[in-house]
Amino acid sequence: MLHVRKLLAGHDVQHIPREAQRISSDTQAVIEREPKSAEILKVSTNMCEQHKGNEIEVFCLDCKVAVCVMCVIASHKTHDCLDIDKVSEDLRKLVLSDNDKISELWKKTEELLPRLEKEKSDVIKHLAAVEDEINTAADKLIAAIQRDKAKLLSKVESIKVKRFKQLETVKQELEQHMTALEIFQRNSETLLSSGTACDLVRSANSLHDRADELMKFDVISHLHPVNVTFTSSTLLDRDDMSLLGTVTEGS
Image 1 (cartoon, helix red, strand yellow):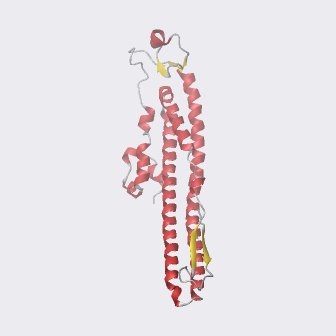
Image 2 (image 1 turned 135 degrees about the horizontal axis):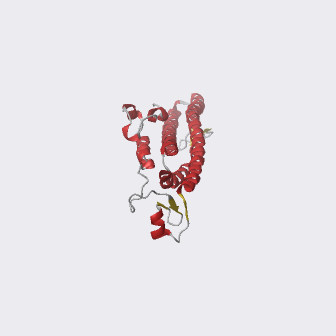
């Protein structure tokens, strides 16, 4: 699958090229859920809509809104207000900090993908060893146990299929999360490089909330080692029991 970062580089999420057809539907859904760069910037003239001709210069801490001087006089004179550039600078630092954290999380998430491939290889090797045990035991028993042998190998195959599905699901979840991290990085970088003070004031807190949400994703807990064992049976004189043994899967 085309690497998500390369696929998205230089393209607005709304205009993803044909290569995007290779992305899973779940990953595409992540792309569509994330805010667009244009929504982050919310480009405006930085002029007050209520008092035409007055530039927005003040941020009301009580109301969490950017206003002009006339607005302060009319509706916010008893409120705690600061110069918008000062508030913008503080929020810029917040966005920078969030972006650094998200970048680090993205790296850690990316590093887990090779581990998934190794996990898949380990599953194959481990279950192959289990199958060898089953086959070795079966060769030493009489033909009557062939029915049990087939049942046990079928169960191993079922575990293998289930485990592969689980690994694929984890891989998709990690890729989706990486996509969300990339989009966050692009949006925050766009805000920092192209956004006005008003843009920062309007979008920094929502970006910060999104960063907190992304940071809650526990990448390590998604990986679980394979735990399947074969126990050989000694009850060769019992027809009501499995003569060859049993296959069990640990949690």
